[in-house]
Length: 173
Length: 398
Image (cartoon, rainbow over all chains, first blue to last red):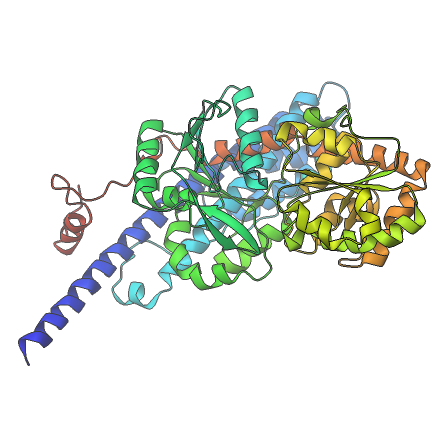
């Protein structure tokens, strides 16, 4: 091979190495974004569970919905990644069932906190799932899989849950 | 919070995105936040430039999305963007239209941290986005929170860029419009107002002018006020001679006088043909207390609540437009009912509500450390190359 061919090969190699390094940087950044987004979502879910537990005090003590909400809030506050989606779905359902029982008087603060907490969950979940989607697109690229650029990081998962308690909050005032 | 806003379009040229950024900045300041806006500015020494605006250089006109966008891109703008980011130490960086080649995109490429982006555009098939999605992706990956101002804009994001965005509609500063006085030149004749660039086809002035002869037949003393930049004489030349006296061309109207223009109208007309992501002009008219006749575009239908808060007519349908305007001008009771509905709708989009929603987004993405700048490699810090060598040798980059 002529020296010219070697030069071209060397240039291609350098460009490839730069590209790989740049992709690895992108992956790192995306992983950091997923971690931060999950932390925000986790905090939002905890805040919602705490708001639900606070709402229990204002509900009629004997209603079955009250006991169900208390139980669902306690389960959500217990945390742990296991079955998190299911636990949060149960809390959404319990909130929807219990909110119409909230008395008109004296529950404005509880209602406002529940509404804010529910909004935060929806926002944090949207941002988390966008981060996961971006991350999964890059992780699916041939180059990334071939060179194991993601290392030992597990593939991030979407957090799917039913977070629609807004409707119940609005009809409850 | 320390908030850095970036507006990609020239600050001193009127436009929807500029107005949105200005109103957002003023409302955030009123809530006690620290706000700085980086944007291209034509007249950096103009006395009315707010102190919180940081000029990023002059912009050059480029045709984009059926109109002329003035964009700002280059080494000087990049250097100013870096300096602004470094000096600002923002808790949150909020970019507007980061897919437009201007300072928002430069900031997206150079910043690291809590970055929110608002997407305003709602082209159903944006060729620019389709072609450049791959090129843009590494930059868009850095956005931690995405906001769309309309359902249509959100769909563009989901189709072309992947991922999701939260929907926060545009705001209208109701207090600026409610109770505005009509212009001195407004007379007792029934008046229709059009507001927008006269030479921008998608704003639809041509459809309104086509409807004018029929409208004059229905309402003989009707008058048309046209407010907006562009070649007014060319517009006048298109009109039949006998109709020229009925059309008053006001030219570019100062932002402060817009409310008075709406207030001078018995009916506000928005004959737009396409490309509207959100009906902010309709909301402004409604906040002023002026009933609206608008094209049946998705964005307008949403704001007008399927016709409950305003009259919708077929897009590019001059006959229907004339009929709709004529009927409303002749029916004071219907106008009064629409004014009331319009005020109710506008209140729901007041900036106080919208700003609160945006702050909730900031609070969701805010990180313990402020937004940083990706520095270019220097002799002291070989940057990318050093990190690469570290990776290849298995060492953790420092």
